[in-house]
Image (cartoon, rainbow, N blue to C red; front, side, top):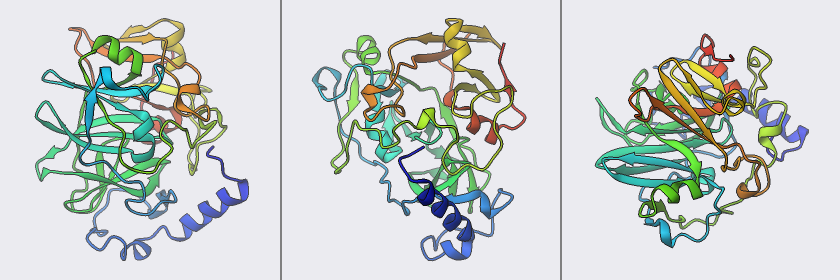
Length: 320
């Protein structure tokens, strides 16, 4: 759990529940249409602490050649995006503090996203039937997962599923693109001429983990749902493809699995970003790649088990 006292955590939960209503949000969100939503109860949406844009998304990221990067440690995770020969790495040391990067890769407008509380790192195509959107961080959480918003209509979007849940665009789904977390060493070994996102110009402790010890906690932060089945720890990592989830421990112990038309591989060398006080000090959780029968990368996520169960309660657990 983030370094909060039990008293502070309880205060935040009760304060969030007391304000779980559009009536408390309209002054901050005058353009959001709260008359349209797909959620069952407003109490599902809680304040994560920061206000709207209190966690600033990055809209015009700068890049540098991989060979020129000296700040990032070799085992630190990056999100890799490859489109039409354009290869870019988005370090978690920056996404930890910004959570969304709006960019264009290989001519495709993308949103590279990371929710630390769910360990969910996903890349979406920003083009929709309603136009090309840009995204910011709302400061709200649902089932402990980041709620994004689009700047065009200020509809609210669930990051874990890439779907609008409040506002005029409710029900609109973003297309998830293939991307994956790997270590910085693994990225630059494959792509020595690739590009890496440069450090943003904000006063942040880049490289530090503000959620020290979180992925060893007993319970997720600001999550009131049920624990996953099969005795799986709520903060155990799972590899999600569609509505299936493979426990990372199984993938690692079996040195990869071939199931459901997929090849899920595992390679040591990537640190957990949510373990030690520094990202590079985290224990080795390894790198997963998911490919289909033709060797093509498949959209997937490596999120915590509680989040998979919260958003795919009828999903399939690939335990053996």
